[in-house]
Length: 182
Image (cartoon, rainbow, N blue to C red; front, top):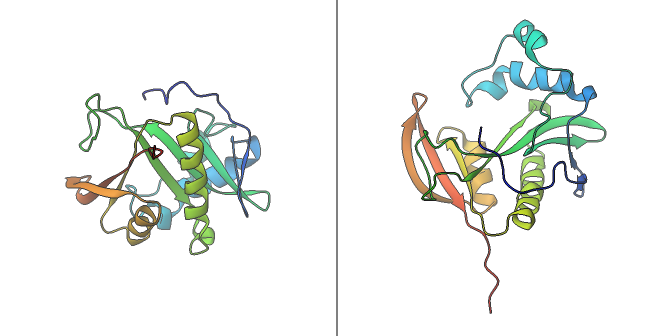
């Protein structure tokens, strides 16, 4: 994994109207296991993993790395958002060095349909724009993932290309940095 860049990590918790974006804590471990074991969550991200395997593999402090936010609603983890450098070996790039920041998110099914994803991703993107103002952010999702496609549009991502990866058609988009007008 390529480092995110010259950012202070972890940032102070980011508060939105209903959510807190923060670094993971030991109390989040069960939610991480649930997230990766959920068949509903795994539908468009390569499938779920067996719970017993996750119980053995997930560390006591999961997700403790730059670019990984836990999304907290009412004191409990409901999601994780990541801002990582896209693997240069994968298709889909907008920069010559192929090291774009890529937004990813996974929500527990009980949090679906409440607007949390848009609220949390917008806050993470605002943080990123302040931390690394001249950098675009990319997003890649299966075209079959209607929720993710709607979220990408709502967040201002525009399509760059489509390609086949992981046995499915992928939508690849970019959200360019906002340039202040003179």
